[in-house]
Image (cartoon, rainbow, N blue to C red):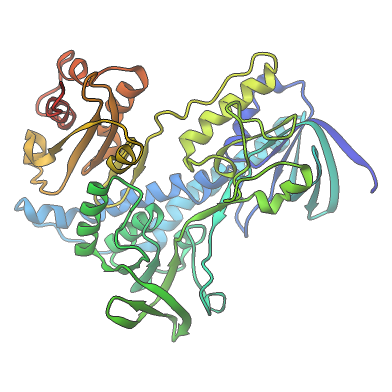
Length: 468
């Protein structure tokens, strides 16, 4: 087997896992493994390179490009003169790639106690890995291992898909030029965000989904409203089953079965946004005795420890919440538990919020109405339209609303769901109230709410709850 280099700690993945190493680890001998993807550095993980950061830079650009549509309602004539795609793309990745490269350089050159391995790793024993680097294979082991290896896009098994030049969220932001048309396969948050980005920049978007709603994991009222609004913006084809994908001139052709029979779509580009899967299979976790769930997620306890002593996991590879803020929280838990093994702390996943940066924006925390009903949890609910508060009125918003669920007797908030302008910002006081146990009445009446600011949406929704 040859020489095995032994470390105090191995970290697999450089997303949130990279943040574990601070000055308290200066006397630890650490190995960091990053598999890398394509021709661009992926140091820094999904969020930095192909996820939250670049997508939000594109989303903001798309929001600006949408200004003429918003202005029309208000009697303001604004024109979108041009979209300089390469300039947009190169501005985004000129920043992203620089951060990724400098993060890698810092770890490699400024941390004498850290050895960086660039290549794919597979477990060969509980805390032992074989890493395939450009210089050849090497075997490393450690007393402690952290699996923070993230996930990757799922490619559905549709005849012909491997023979066409399709894109995923990993590659679509680096397109050489904007296509005239795009088929987006998938109706989750990734599909919804890219549909907004590309349609605002002038691409004809067709969204294809197997179910009857877009964003179907959201509260049903939110999902239904978003589906209705999506159908006005994009060519929305729901309840469809893909039969075959093939090349068509410079683009792609998709054959489908729908409510009215067979259909054929053609477009310049195909974006596959049908979900993501954890990278546990690439690591051969079974060889280490590390248990995974049916969906491939690495099983962890409340301290983020796996089923193997001395091995922890965090982020998309193990968490049901594929969110950067959750991965960062779990990273801090793992960091503490590595440094203080005798006094471990637990992750808090009680009130995990998420947002969808599409048009309109969506934010959510806690139970949806269907979850509350499914689990037999008693609740009351209230809905407040943006159009019913002064600032929403000023914006002429006719579709946005906030929906709250609370316990009838205590007024304790159970869930909050917002669709409309700045939803991810407006929801924050509700996340705070849930985390710190502030009931709806106290929250509504126990503080000033700036008039006529957007948070009045939250105030009025709280006051609308029919509490005992």
